[in-house]
Image 1: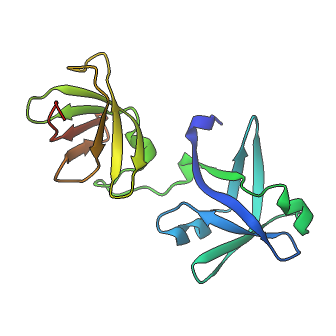
Image 2 (image 1 turned 30 degrees about the vertical axis):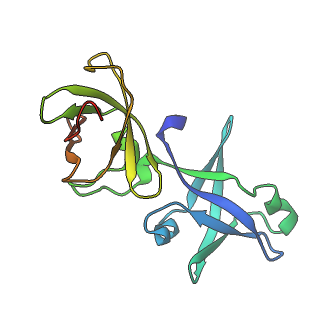
Length: 174
């Protein structure tokens, strides 16, 4: 399995109790969706398969246990470990929705002038809104990097998954 097909969905938090349980920090949306997964991969130089025995929820927090880890000392070694799943395990989305990782590499075109602004290099959230990071490409009208808020119908006019094109309403000088 290729590492670039892995999706970060959680981290192992601090230990809970003495029997190998730990708090699980979910990055899924909504957070409760973490319960739908049980086969995580730890990604460093090699992929290590971590079988989850169970995931339980207390109020807004989640705790879990890895199969065959039965004491607090063994689970402490995994604190802050990032947990990944294969992107194939993600549920299929409706036509009008897209996963962030699918946006990377898409061409960004300004709808007003039909100019290529670049390609999506990444996404980030700076507090107010999600933003796509647009890096210039060989087809770009200029060599300017841009941050474009991912606000549908205002700045993001369309996302064509098949053609891998995002059409935006964005001024080149912005």
